[in-house]
Image 1 (cartoon, rainbow, N blue to C red):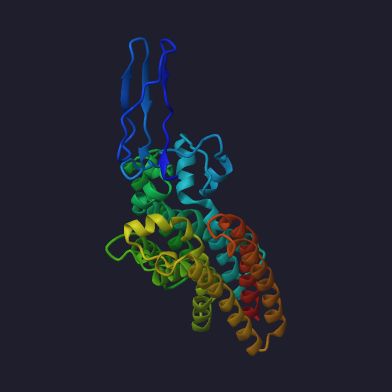
Image 2 (image 1 turned 180 degrees about the vertical axis):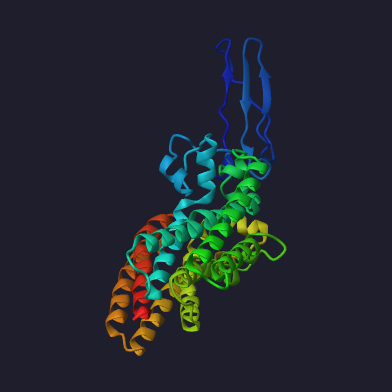
Length: 376
């Protein structure tokens, strides 16, 4: 609306002649513009509000009535406002982001060809999943929210940090506990696997450093849409795969190259999350791809990165003499394309959660198909 029309309040003491206000040559900010007295009647009128002078104020809190407790625990938009500190701590770690990392460990274990369904191997894999998911992904998400608090104050002012639901000391303590917990589990896994070189610990350390420079100045990789999103994609696909494969077998150069290629699909997935933050990113000078190229172009870059990467991997498997695995991967790409047209390409902001919930299961199943293909 070009202006806000304030209600005309009238207090009438009797029924006498109408009183009028002098004409204005411009609209004023909301305030009584004239008071007309005609012996026995008092009329108070308010004029229109100039929106150039009075700006809209973002809500301090999400509407508790429409917020979801389930969304709050998962750490996604539409979350209910919560006062329980432990629920807020879990929200900061965004559990909805853990499954890809946990699945990456499964893929790495499968690719090693040495995983067996024994109590010890299952226990090792669970500890590796705890390291990759709740600990190090939780650390990543918490530190990202900490350094994004100014952007969130614009885009999502009801989130735990900008709303003041959690204090600065509590956030910093959580960051350190999750980081040290993840690194400690990495060192434990190296000892458990009998490694002479602590490869899992260094993977955890490298991933943690990547998470830090992704979110924190002066580097703040997320300021550049290409570099930042590829770093995010590698963190979600390559690093947990490498950890799982190193835990049960040997991490080889061809696997490193293949998973880094797959991380381009992860870049596409990361772009999905950029659409909801366009306004804040633009104001803070972050060159996310939707800001740099516009929403229309960015959404095609997003789906192109996801689909072309998987088709390239299918071609690689076909060339390696594994046609059935290649065919299975192509079969898993088809529903992703369907949901891209049904949801994401229609409205990447409105349907981002529906799209990811519908399409990503097929992408992570494709990762497992690729892992099983490389193990044979």
